[in-house]
Image (cartoon, rainbow over all chains, first blue to last red; front, side, top):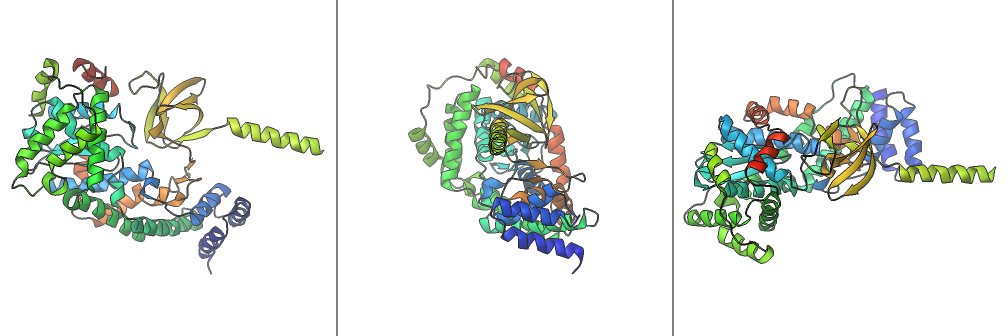
Length: 302
Length: 151
């Protein structure tokens, strides 16, 4: 057996028997003695060998970001971004106003908001903080508060990590196995020879497909949509927007719901059901008029 | 001798109880003067940087940055160690069960491989969105003030 193969094998053998911290320390010492890994790296590899991915919640912000970029690359191929600097700036200012009062104000590389060209009324978010709203949806929105309501719903999906949950546990388990092998290979090669990224890239591709399929075809669970609506109402209120704007948007969507089976309507519960759910879970303040200062700047989006 | 050993153990335990290291888990963040998104920046911190956590309150952690004390969003830090190898290929959260997945699961290297295989993907448009959608905290703060938000 080559030394590289030997270290790889040791990672798995020692890893499976190192549930006790003392044993793990001993195992790390044995691994480190090969000269191919440092003690810290050996400890890291053995920790991986002893654990399993418990849930999608365990993905790090960095991994969510790369997943979100790949999901975005697929979405934007279908719905290209509108290239309007004023609209982009305005949309991102609305979005960041909401993000700043959210429970996850910072993701790995920050939130991004974009209008995408599409005749379907739709909005979606990718892991890591990529939020998209279709041009058809924008044309239906009457004011800034209504726009904020749509963005708040999508931000809620990011904060609640609903996109990540679209990846099955089986896929993540598979990813861990492949990643452990890749990590052991890296350790064994002293980062001097190419690592076989093929298997983990395959799992990555499957995960991306799972999220894209959920966003465009299957939709989130009804409970996740209701959760996103409730959090959106809270975000609007925290930021100083009128949370009643969310109900106004849902009412607009309800008028389009009959006969529409694509886009938003294919992936979301009936707007009327969502309004009913919201009213039972959220105490709305009296509706207020959108201030003149916010009305004046809304033209940037149109 | 026994007393010395007991004293040493007690000192070790005490020092570990006070030391609460945390690591930056976002690409870059700012340590703020107050636990508010738009508070004055005391200085930048970057991915993998180790800080000392002093306290935690309402979604913010109070940290020690050189001689200053400031705040970071809870979402920007991890209690799990982030180890960066010299080649930055082995990025792991050493105390996490999914330690290697953190570095090797979905990483820059995997993205590069995926890009060469996923013909239908438009990463150029993702890069465009990332570059064209940036607004500064000061701009957003001004936007909120002008629109009567954030009261």
